[in-house]
Length: 380
Image (cartoon, rainbow, N blue to C red; front, side):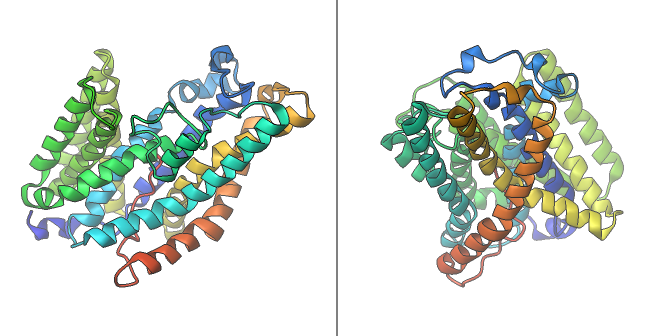
């Protein structure tokens, strides 16, 4: 692809950052049902979400907040295209960047949750929120293979890492196809998105690898397609409006025909193109831009920290309040929990996630410095 095509690209997509952060909060709200679990295997006895606090306002998130994970995959494809299509990158630097970005917080939360689950089993006789907390699943989590590997028997330890596990496979496919994406542009991205979608939907059995890996990749490459569309449209606002309207129409028709995945891809792509247009306009103050970027920076911490915080609270009530779950019915619990999640995630991001990432980048990079300052914070 002609490098001049990328001359229009923004240095940073602040509104995309904001969407990423909001999506992480949506997942937190979706997981509110964890507070009603008596143990890791009590999902069949969960109350109806219409009885949850603020259900009149938040019931769509209680029911469908998990779709924010698929939005995360689309965001990742969009931002990876932004970061890597216009600049050279070696395999070593690409892999080093991924390790430095994902593994420090993941490993810290994995060992922390393993400790929590051990205490829970020893003190109250059951796991919290997720089962399968055995050596096999610990090793799968250690290798970021907790979801894409057929050796897995389900969610385990810090469950939300499942989506990042799948996304790692999309990263590999993206890097392998970088030359073709640069040469053939949007057509190659479309081919990859379609092929991955068809394979992910095929229902065939593959050795070692689950088809959900390819479904994740189809969302990822849909984000790459959205990035190409954003670049091709440039500053032609009328084309942006037509494109967004077309994507929204596809999304509505997909909902009407029961194709949830296509609808999420379409709505997510429309949202990202709209957000990129806002960044291109650039008519907002610096403090707002800083706030939007900060919200996006916290998304990975929020995603990996919120369930361990739930486990702590559930274990506390199991140990000292006769396994009561009455606190979940209080209208105070959700806002206090959200506030704690954001505060703890901020501390984790500032004092652990970011410093650990810098340290690993220095250690793993050939040049001691990686060109990844604009990279996505995946979830999800």
